[in-house]
Image (cartoon, rainbow, N blue to C red):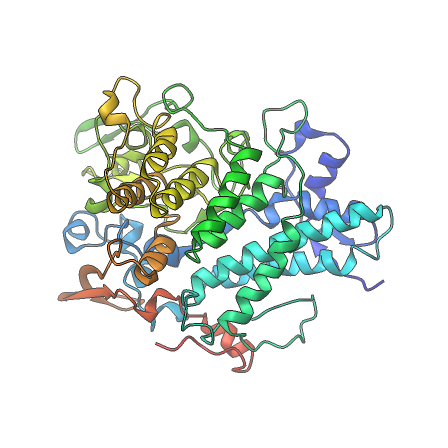
Length: 513
């Protein structure tokens, strides 16, 4: 057997396999934990360690949208010493600067390919290790292919142009199929990339494991593949290809497997208030209970968040998601409980003791946003697919299933329930609901598909931001510029980090802008 050494991968999961679920979230993997893959237990341990897979670093996706406020007006209040958004290292993502971004330390490319490396290690060893039945070997291989498909798709949304007619021969990804470091690094075409992903997805869809709680706990086993997870990803995959027939099919299958929702009326709450003294006054900051975790920690309530079909998170090192006016204006600020719990109006007082009230959007602590397929995402996919097919009444009924647990129950029924009289109106209202439900985490993906699909009534169009000239070291406040992401702008694809291009001796080609 070829020896593959996996560091920091097995200790936590071995507790799960032995039934010690009470200590599941307490054990910290150690860099000294080095295991040669020889048994099925080792492969299960690799899969069970959520730290290997759950977190996606997303500076391009989170900052490069109209959800993020980036303006000279807000900078005048905060400055880069206070608000992370105005650090040059964040600004280059927020302004789609394809010259500066590749010079940055980019964790997205490396971390996603690391997950693919783990998946390939499992595929290489599943038929070699001892202690597995034939059905267990097939199950493990399907889960590894699910991971590989999921993370290749994520990379494609970050570094490639949208996969539409006419783009088939555009630059795709490096398709890694083994753990060999001498594997070719040339980028495949977009068609080859998506054919590869779809082949893995086809195998993953054979997974029929139910999504269940870990026995004796309230934690869902959402960090592992399940029927809900793979069908949820399939719904997302086809949705972003504008294949609404298949997207609806798989959204329905995902919801049939798991449809739990968090009712913000009864199941969302604040953590203990935080009081700070700023500018000679006392500010009380109210934060949702989901905020109550520390740096680098995964808390029980993350696994107890029952809307996850697959436990994945989006994160950026910008610990201040500053909402734009266009995003904020979409919420009913009286009755929408997402606005109540996730928008913190005086966040600046909390994080920087700033004598100004500058808001932030938060979910899990300062940086974590739900990333994997969830029940709300499936309802929104289902609703939009129904609306685009002309089934307006069904679409409104579907989206209102979500609003029933997001809007204050004291609101008038006419406020809680959306209505529409045409396909175009229904799609527009559902798109606004998507933005309210999944800001920052999914918005760039939506911009990609809406600007490139065959309909024109739903185009996002050009996105502009007005800010100063800057480089990675300085902000030049004497020069104001308008930064634009055009409707079909190739800058929708993030540049590949220069370190990867240099390390490949130029075999990996940069995006063409």
